[in-house]
Length: 238
Image (cartoon, rainbow, N blue to C red; front, top):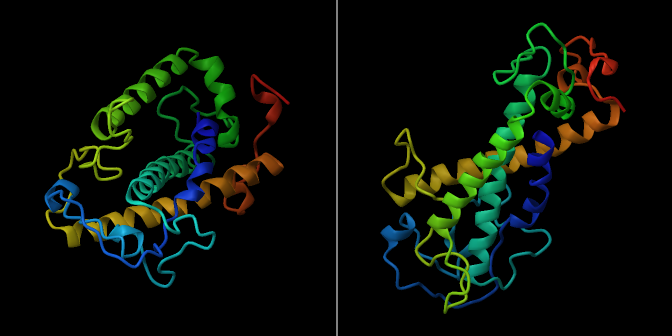
């Protein structure tokens, strides 16, 4: 499962937004309240979306966002936000399920060293084979909900994918009521989420690469946990 999640992170590098080179200023006819207070302005960095932060403001070394229109910019931010959230979950999943914590709430692995997280899928196949059907339903449900909230019906007259009044990444999920009421506060929180998501995307890529190289847990590589894993103990060996 973690490998599948990590593979989904790779396209996110294109989602780092940058300033538009267009000199004019254009605002949509939507009320700011429909977009969490954000009023798209093409004269600003990334149409005024949150996410720019010192010391690397307007970061776009490959120019992905040059001359980008509002629709494409919203695509980029939707992708970046979604991939960042998946990456943050993946990093936590890797760290807490590996030694020395070895916390596996879904599977009966007490007292067993099942090695680096990139090999945990092997154990799942044997211990809980129906997990994949459940996983498919959960992912499908989450994606269906996201599409119904933020995406237009395919083949619509305007040929638009994202709804005009949809703020990228905001599907209305806020069970703890943490969403700020003003755009200033929302912008600050959104920037924090984006920065943590960007760091997580880089982090999970590094973790997976390292574990593929030597087959050892990250804390073992860092010298913070003993190397006790025996690869031959897993149901699937390479």
